[in-house]
Length: 425
Ligand code: ASP
Image 1 (cartoon, protein in one colour):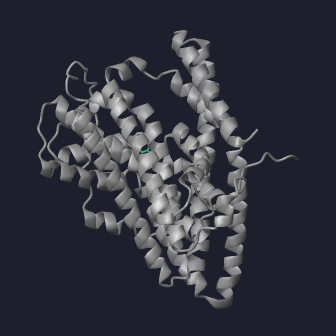
Image 2 (tube, helix red, strand yellow):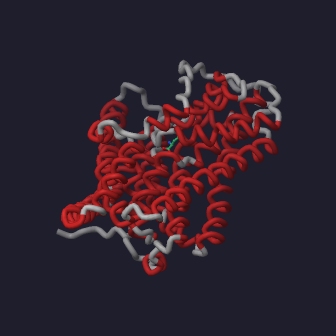
Image 3 (cartoon, helix red, strand yellow):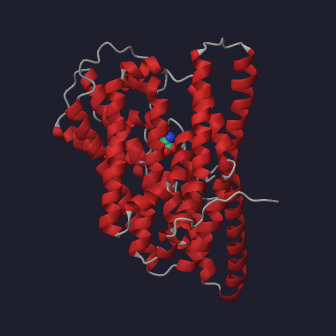
């Protein structure tokens, strides 16, 4: 049985188990809750996420050193970087525009005045200044950056080291060979861990679905539906159009190959934790060469969040309508700008998109308490938008690779390339 089918089975079985536990109304202190849900299943889910996260820093570091070494700091590097960032911004801008337009047409917040506000206690952070944000990308201590998982700092250090490696003659060649070997070994390790995904996904879904608040979703159905519709439109129209026009490749085949990272993103709600799976898929299943993938995918997992921007766009309109506050055209342009920045600043972990929404609301003078309206149903939307975030990273990496002649079409066309097959010992 192929891996996707196994993950899907794990997902549906977990979902059903969670629902059965929820519907049977077992008490919070029953053995089912204490030992099964919060004990065994929660432990399984946490171990799965830990095993993915454990790979992030070593894999990004090693594979980016290899990638930067083969680009060697020549002119291509700036061009690849520029194209990648431009496409990330462009796709996020399109995403939020679609979200705003749909929300204005559907008007999910009108007539929603009956919804109660769950009080929220978070105070929005003062956003850091642009200068501080840029300075903070440059590490003073690469080990500390790795230990804290500060991805942009790790990326900068790996790029610099890779460039130096390519310019260091024989010494560089020796170390480069070691990094290439390490990269192959880490890719093997992630392949081994991915084959455990069906079990991890089962645990995560079972725990989550014991507490999904269906009644809440019913009350906010218009908001929920608008976000889902915008996500679906963006994923099924915008990415395929860009892949067809800019990369001239078959988008259906592309999405088919991306299904594993999308499923992992859906069940972990974290593009950061999914990153190792995304990187492996983009390189080995889609065929993007390491020099582009190792840069574009980790950068995307850190700064490119189209799904998050979509939620923020719809939420802003929803909250404005709920409080009957009119936004002007200038306000909407401001929302596009700040939501794009906010999605760059959103870490790829569960739920942060909602916290960053405070920044957008502040910017256009909407009450931040409005977040309390939608917080109750954010968990499910988080799963969906994280899948779109990850699909967006893969799409941009593939388009950039194609334009640089770094997409291996033989791998892309081969449906079996990079497939995870169970190993027999
Ligand atoms: N969970 C999202 C991600 O990891 C971020 C968010 O929107 O909360 O991509």
